[in-house]
Image (cartoon, rainbow, N blue to C red):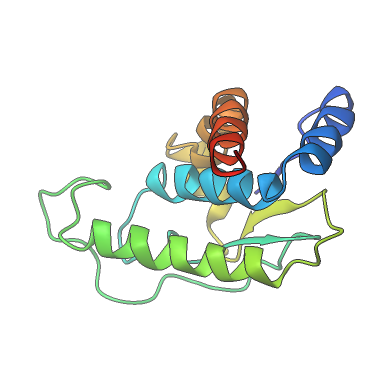
Length: 151
């Protein structure tokens, strides 16, 4: 499963214009999208939530579940370590963003687990779908945050 940040072609120009007008907009936007993605992700062993990626292409799905499963009776967002996994996943995405070349404006969010489609479609958690639906709100919030910093 991947989420291409450029949801439709009409946004390409707008994204480029905002990026040119507002120093730091791209990274602010990607950081907010990344946090939304990990916050929308369920956790069982922590493997899925900590293996989201941001880059110029999709990563290969090579990782199976690793680690101890969540305790019986807890849901996918109630895992005792869920907030730790969210933080770890977010920190990984921040490192991915920092590694992007400044010229990059088209990126792909993807997940390295072999069961990524099960999480998105079969189990109905849809972290990528939920995150992409929040794109407009996140873009506006990122623009406002960068504008206030650049004043």
